[in-house]
Image 1 (spheres, rainbow, N blue to C red):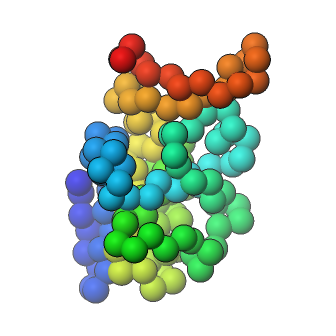
Image 2: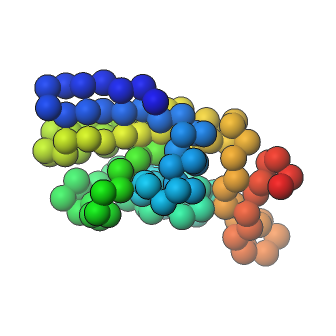
Length: 128
């Protein structure tokens, strides 16, 4: 995890593997800031959707000690949203470096829509 301190606030960039491990331990809330269409097509199972276009830090869920980790397609939008949260007074915030593209490149599982049926299906690139 890459950490950047700015006075009293901490901004973190997580790798896909770090995020998956923390999510599996129930330590984080993953928030997807892509568009609803992107999210519907494929997303990290269990991620919440909060599109950047309508994002307001005050509307984020509280999770009693869980870190909020944002992600988008490439890491650009999630970094912007993270910056907005820091400006809004959050003391610690994180985002997925490389975004969903890095998640898929790391061969981690995700949910995709089956184009033949329209039903969601879990994609596990490792075959597990």
